[in-house]
Image 1 (spheres, one colour):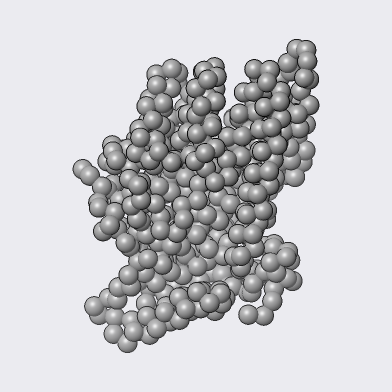
Image 2 (image 1 turned 180 degrees about the vertical axis):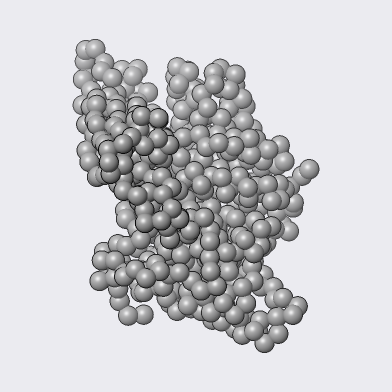
Length: 492
């Protein structure tokens, strides 16, 4: 089986450039999540002695504890997530039969612990500080939900009634973003949301043959929504898309509505809309992708991973879900079940696609199964570079691979290539600094650290600018009142 010609995939928002599939809206690498981690160890790096015995870089901590119910009885099979405040590190585990959990190798920083279990209210602890080499104990306590299937559980399961269970209440003040699904600028989430929404922008509108008057009216409202979004009237746009979807719940109208909600960080409403779309149109690849990305941005990584695996199986020849999967694979620090196999299939179905080989190599690098995998990773990265000599991310991964194998010369050469072929190569500068520091070349190490700081600051400013450019919706769910963020709404 071979992949469809990308020139015939306009509805999927793809284009061919240099032997590499890309989304027509700029494919922004999900590498930001990993890059943001570098600042956590910078202070420890610079404090290393110039002379004498080298110290260990970034001594890591342990976070552990027990989760129990309101009667202090241990709870097993609780999903537990530990995430850093800058979203750079995310650890996931599940409590054992005694309710215990353990996270090893936790870098110092500020973290929040979140716990969830069906039939119980979600719990969170933090933010709290984790110090160098600390063994920190954080216990969690749960209360039972009013019913086994709460409103939130229903939304996460993709249930959706004829009437929406949410209401868009306004636009957040861009100088003080708050409310659902917001927080610090998270480039990975916002880039994924933009590109998922782009699947709608490039898909041709198709009316049902028997749509009649309602179909014509729905099309009119959808076009009004498109015009409003282009002119920056986002609140008006989402309401037009909603009317269109309610008049005619077609695949195109539901996706346009869900995409607009996702783009403006209304993740829970987006899950509702995409959930209905997925039930009505189970063979829609982009609906499955939209639901997966909305779920991921809402924090349910495991559920999102399963949804994306299913999206790849709807039409194995469609490259779109693999591309999203690859970018999420870069962002997550854990190996997600089934993803390596899917990305391997992508590399076989698209042997001339540089990103197919690159993403498969990234997936393999998280398995750490030994030297045989290292050889495969190296071969896949070299094939990606052969297909696209300007793929800076592949050079970076080669540099990381060679550095781990203590091949200093090859690592330096690969990292210099990464710098020359990446717009903001902050991680490459940082890793070069590490190598120079380890080999005793202090002058070059300090020079690379200085370059790392400059490019890292540029990346941060760019991410913050992009974050402010997108208006954030304030919304209510069911009979709830809008939260404190609604105080920052403005007329629109």
